[in-house]
Image 1 (spheres, rainbow, N blue to C red):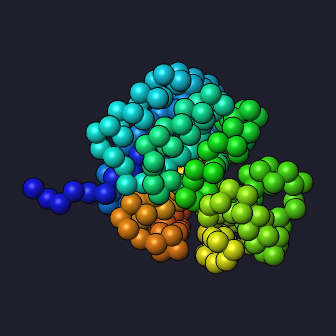
Image 2 (tube, rainbow, N blue to C red; image 1 turned 90 degrees about the vertical axis):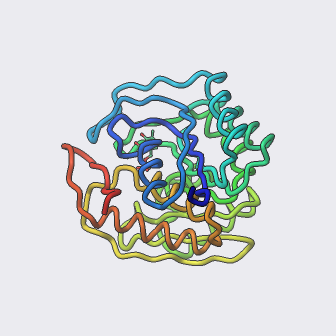
Length: 264
Ligand code: PLP
């Protein structure tokens, strides 16, 4: 018998290509040395070129998946990704609350890497009102932060504006915020805002267009770090190093925005 592994539950959508969503989460969790579990919110038929079809999980089925996991193997951390509709957001928020889930990392997934909306407007409002206040850490990219703050596209272009936005979101939800700059020009620098303080995490831009699933990977790796007892800054630093390595490995699959290499 070995000592028990830390465990992480991913509540997210399925990506048939295996590059983002639940599949990226489970690959990341294995690579980070924790036991991964899943509650699937939606099935997507997609590849590196686009999303072709989606079918959302029923409310009762999502609820049953979350209860089945928590009632047996209580996760040490939870990663939340794509939740396509407001009623499904309600279920997740209610269960995270009723089970008093800890180490909850919410990746505010709104649009697929290929540009398709993955959640509707009512779901964004429900995420804002019900889910984000329950999080330990929220990991928006620049476009998602602009949406949450009602800012115009292009308004978070410089480091000072990113810091202000991260601090504003942190005080609005009473959580830590990791605002990711990876989609902006220049280096892939992210700012962590927590209790009024900011910390930057920097990494050079890697010349690899295949970044499908980077947000899923980073948030899962942070959840893995928190599950094993790392502090938030330690978990962010180690997750960023893992994600950078998976991009730098240079996997080149598919005709579009390809997945990263989790076996690097
Ligand atoms: N979740 C699912 C099911 C997806 O299909 C996608 C993107 O296509 C995402 C999340 C977000 O992906 P990324 O990590 O590239 O932001």
